[in-house]
Image 1 (cartoon, one colour):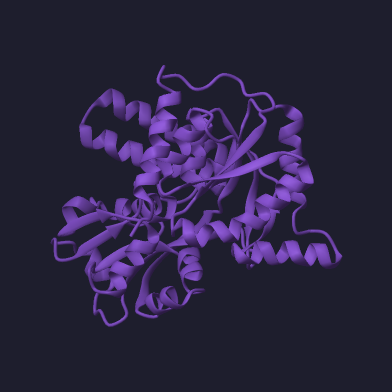
Image 2 (cartoon, rainbow, N blue to C red):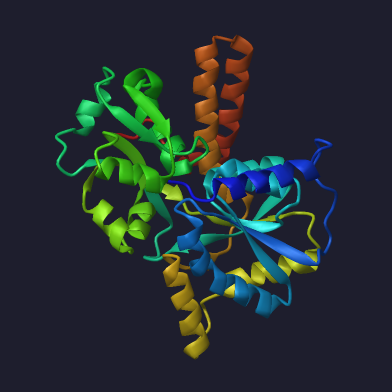
Amino acid sequence: MRRNLIMLAGLVAATLALGSCGKPAEKTGAPDVLTFSILSAENQQSMEPLWTPLLNDLQKQTGLKVKPFFASNYTSLVEAMRFNQVQVGWFSAVPSVDAIDRSNAMVLGRVISGDGSTGYQSILIVNKDSPITLADVLKCGKRYTFGMGDPKSTSGTLAPMYYLFAPHNIEPSECFKTVRNASHQANLGAVATGVVDVASNNTEGLLFAGRETEGKKMVSHVKVIWTSPLLPESAIIARKDLDPVVLQKLRTFFLDYGKATGPEGDRQRKVMAGLTYRGFAPADDTYLDSVRAMIDSNALREAKASGDPAKIAAAQKTLAEVEARLGSNAPSATAKP
């Protein structure tokens, strides 16, 4: 169900070509054109008209030339920023961490959801007519097919592993009949039509899908059997080596967007509503520490599976460090379903 695979292959090829030396691009300074990356997890056709008004405003208010870069998977976003194919973008939590660690990136601000909440939730869904319960899922036995998100998806993969499967000592590949990785939209359609028994998704994904006729129909054919604790909203990420003046222009634009009074403010808020957001709030890299804890917990699980004492010790140390920074705000890996 993903769109324009040929185009994506070309974009990735171009990215890798420019990075053929195996090293990230040199310092960008003030490029003539800023490329803004957007994850088209649903599809570019539905996402492009929603983001175009905001990018037009970004270009107009900052005086910077801006063009969009749509990618259908998380790796493409991170690699494109790593090799300076994009300089700024809208990233969900896990790719934000990857971009910070691998692509010389930093957080400019975070998204505020449409209802004003500080996060969203990962969910498991089944067909509305299915008798499958969460207790049934946790019994495993390779009875059901499972649709999991992109391996780097916060809500589609990482959160279900951290909050649900790991506390119950469940490895999905050993629990389910089959496990397939797909976008939230594809997993929603697969559950709604009975192709897959159970799938991960998120609360925003259902909200977004429910705004269109076909998506609304799919949403009406599923039900939620598990909900995670709140997860950090997506963020606006930029390369650190952009000119400081450019970085400040970007930060100011996003933090001020939708806050004006009068007709112009109303128009901007309408643009944000189309994205199911209310606006943007200040944030820095520490905003993602709870996600780092989930990533590091997953790394510890893999280290234990390997049986390598050195890997286990290193993973335990890394996890302890991020949980120490979080203190009482650390997410609980023993959260109950």
